[in-house]
Image (cartoon, rainbow, N blue to C red; front, top):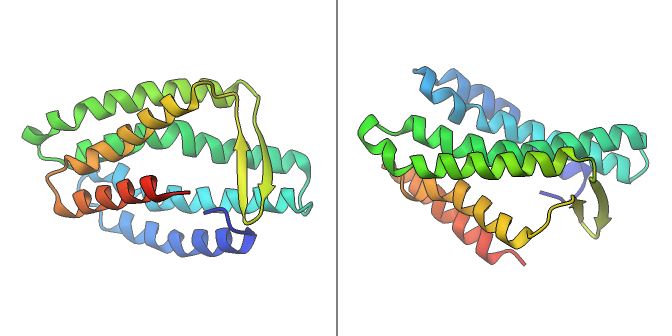
Length: 178
């Protein structure tokens, strides 16, 4: 959500209690990776608020750069590894094999994107109502496709109807973006 400092702050603030409630509902250790996702998204939004503040000149370039790096580390390497793993751990033992390939794909995507982000060629600039992050990513369409498959695939193959519905919403949002 790249609209403004205020939009990111509100979204992050709303997601913090959702994350706390999700963690409170955990009954088994295997549920923790999925339950932590709202808190991770809250931190992600709050980091982007700091990036916006840097673009607007309200924080130092050093703080902006650190926030942009942290934002990208969550968005690029963490999510494609964490989300498939979280779904795999929720599935009953016999159903995990259908999600396992996405965990492997997510790990590969995550490893490559970690190298891309940490190589130091990261930048950010503002467009009207949006931030654009620049990395040294080559063959971005290829890696974007693998990222989408790694993150959306497990939901679509889940045995839980709510996760399948979530996956369908993600498919729609990824194909309808301008």
